Length: 338
Image (cartoon, rainbow, N blue to C red):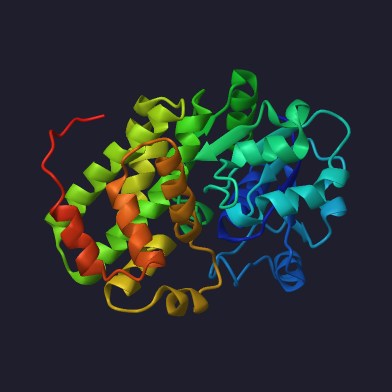
């Protein structure tokens, strides 16, 4: 495939890893960072120690704090800011976007707190249908540090446009990064967002020392409630059996590199949320997504008891063991229920 001009918006760990992958694939990649010192370090030292420590980046990768420079003549734009900043960042980027048609890839996971919108819906509102209708969502089990170290990784690309999904697949795929395509944008985005809520729950369980039985039950029943909400919102529950669902859920709820699981562990050990977050530079998406997820569940009449338990711990100051007791004392039910 010929080299493409690509602008990547967001130089956190995941944005940097994706930009590095694209650059190593031979594309002309520019990475935008809102932090000048991060852009300088990537450009001059080929490292991003703030968000991706210990990784040597492709020396051809360019970085800048100037959105206009990053997006100049871009043929592909990758949006990968934390979900809470996607709207504001893309509103800034809108006037800099190329006038010629370009491929838009959304690699941010989460729900917008104020609106409960998925990230592709936010992009549609900000950029308009002509730009965002063919948006490709990239999601799946993928720790940035492992992709950046070129360890085998597989993810899903979801788009209403098969042509755009295949084009994105060709951009990213190489000997260590495998990408599958599908059409269920709703299920893919909900799986990627809600697994962060469950990772908080898994971390709390581990922090309390509840054991492997508890974790297995938690993951399985969490998947059931994610499937219920996905079905209600028009997604395909079968999507949750794939990389964007169970794959991402397993990784984020069991992996030591998971920020959300780490936050949950500390809460399970007795620390307060504000204290845990104050010591983190990177964003734990599940904290804000929990509020949006519970709001969606209430508005659409979907029971999500595990997500509601996480909400009660984070925002209602319920002790984790009390939240657990409430879950275990719920009315007995068949395993499959609507």
